[in-house]
Image 1 (cartoon, rainbow, N blue to C red):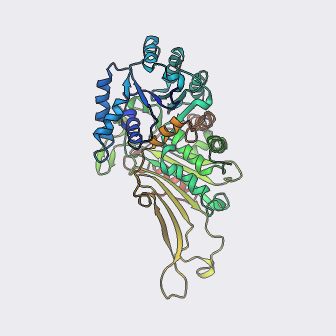
Image 2: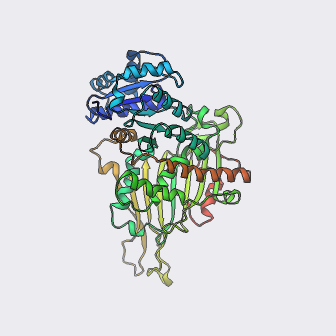
Image 3: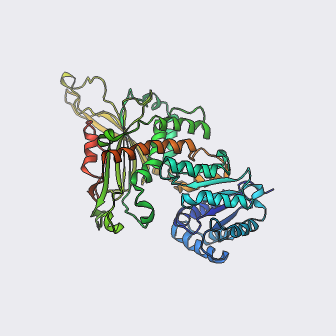
Length: 487
């Protein structure tokens, strides 16, 4: 009987994601001795080629994306030796039959299928596998985002897969959940006694989540236009971060308990309409500018045609539950930002009464701030008040930083690719860091309310010069409430 997690079938194996992330992750797991015994990788794509040609292609990708400091020709050869390639196109029964023959009965002992393809191919591919006898009760199916483009299409995708495999066999991938610092949010909140008592509306004034990219379209023209920043980034990455920040403590660290609490948060997001979309959202589209000292063109110039697709979005969100009532969550993400940066800021409320300075006016007193940087560097930074040294009778306060660099603290350990963690959990059948169907649908329900609000209010993207943090209206969105973005 083959180990249930020892056969890895990858569709979309000739694609960019497979070359940049999936195969380098498999390489690292193999190098560290973490792959199961008798492991076989069956790579599949529409391109016709033999095993030897595909292996040469993967070796080149490993040299490029693993990096010269870690690439080892012997390890690469070991990985390539357990890779076979089988061309398969969705809907082609003869090719699926050849795939089944290539697997030679391994599916009966368990098969892990990774769909790194457009979502329109998820159900047809799974159906082809089922018709070829490759879907069994031990089959696991992983799906890359996006899961649809709205709630209705998401349900169609999930229904198509759900008709063939149970929910406990489905692993929806959001690579942000594989990042160490995103997982560390759980440790920060629930592994330290000083934070949880303050993690609510009594002590917290507002929360900011920023996910900035310096890149433009980067060859994603066919996918990105018509999708935009709201669907591409907020619906998945940003809302997953928000749900971890805002969730109630789970009863235990397992997939059901953690995801039960996350979905409660997502269902508590206050929907928008045409009126609130005007005051609680900003759409932007980058124009020509400069990023990192280099002149770059605008979105429509890259695209080659006019477009109303937003490349930037800022939102003021509310979570209507006991813990977060009245606490705004400011979310922003965009392309052609000044820096590649993913960051969370927890802004605490000021002390209720200051004993420093005349008439209770604190001399330099500022509210505490917790900053959690997810990328590129990883750190947790707490801004607190301290007395400035000196002999003055009045106490003068200054803000000082308690800084924990996770990169420095764990300097002896290699920084993992997010997909390494996800692939390892996928092979083990652990769904904790994967997205459940009800989570996806709760996310789309809120996103659809924003899109409908934009349509109702006729909100179009406002231009912003590349290299800036979005349109000026994004600054006004938060400053109307007396706060400022942390840049």
